[in-house]
Amino acid sequence: MVLIPAFISLGMWQWRKAEVKTGLQAELDALSTRAAVPLPTAPTDVEWLRFRHVSLRGTYDASRQVLIDNRLHQERAGYHVITPLRLEGSEMHVLINRGWIPAPDNHRFVPDAPVPLGTVELTGIAVVPGQRFFNLAPQPSTGWDPVWQNLDLGRFRQVVTYPLQPVVIQLDRAAPGGYVREWPRLDGQAGRNYGYALQWFGFAAASLGIWAYFLFRRP
Image (cartoon, rainbow, N blue to C red; front, side, top):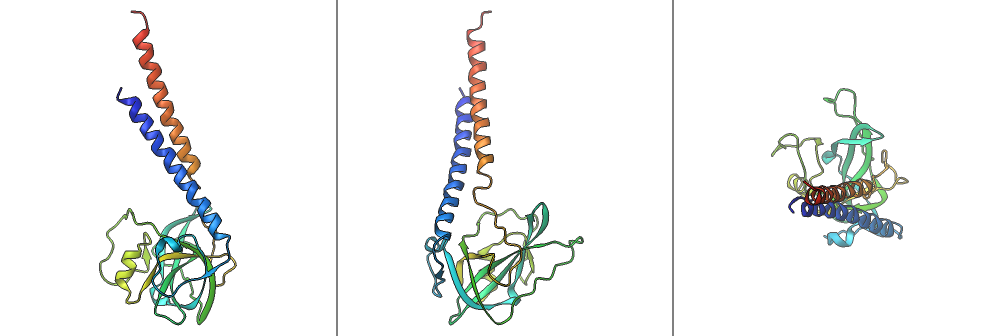
């Protein structure tokens, strides 16, 4: 009586997670195939920007570039290179994910990720960074750390003096000044969630079968 509803509830929870990921990927696929729209220079609603294919022009702020640690590509450890870009004709900035670079053999050394100089013209997909993180160590409250465990937009806003759009632009593969850009699909683990859901439903069915066996068997 306790286990069967619990197993079914856990199965439905995993099933819903898979459906959410599949739905988000479908939304991204639909919006990203449209013509690129200019990224606004005024603060913009995050839901309007989500998954938009945008074009932008401006200059990079190399002094506030940050590397996001523990990012894998083809089972190799590395970093995502995040560089703020000042949009031309305004003080508004937006974070650009310029792609993945490999980590050196000695993790104490920070790899070089040169920043293009002058005005650049880019296109990319606007994504909303996560807000729930698990940090392996306390984050510094002052100063500037060139390597972060997670891309925390709130923390970034605390250390810069300029306004920041609420999204990160994943640079298109054809855009200049980037690195490896094979962005993971949002539904990449949906199949795993469906598998977990079926396991939980299987546990519920097994519990029902065991209960029926001991209930109806002859002494």
